[in-house]
Amino acid sequence: MLLALVATALLAGGCASAASTRDEPVLSKREYIAEANELQQDAAAVFSKLNGRLAATPAQAKVHLAAFDGLIAGYEALDPPRDWADEHAQLLESLATMRQSVLVVSRASARNRGAVTAQVARYRQAQDDFEAAVQSINASR
Image (cartoon, rainbow, N blue to C red; front, side, top):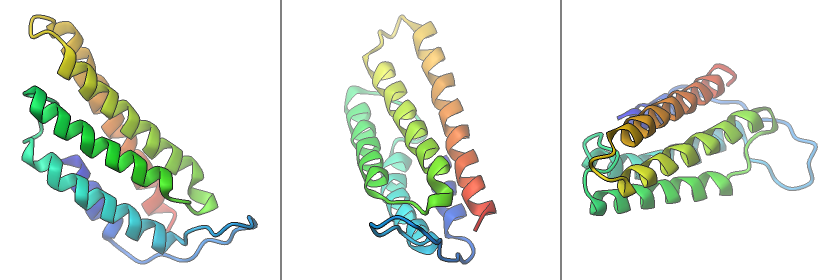
């Protein structure tokens, strides 16, 4: 699953500390990646159980939504290095979009294939956006 690959991508390589002029503590690049990896690993375990489906059943949708809620809350709690603020915002936006797509799919009528198809496309685009943000982070370590 894509999120498992993202976790692997974030694990690779070393990182330097980011300088900040803010008063509150900011995570170093190494700390940010370590915390993001932990979030991803927890979520990847849940997502892998769903076998790549957005929401095959209401029960699976509930589990999937809870995993996204955990990821989103975890990322919101991270204080990224200043030069990764845009990527961090993109990660959050992508996760929120994927979560919303799962929610819509879980509530859609089985007869409404158009809505489901549109949400699957939206979900996949958000995955691509998430991956692009991760690649940008990896490129700037």
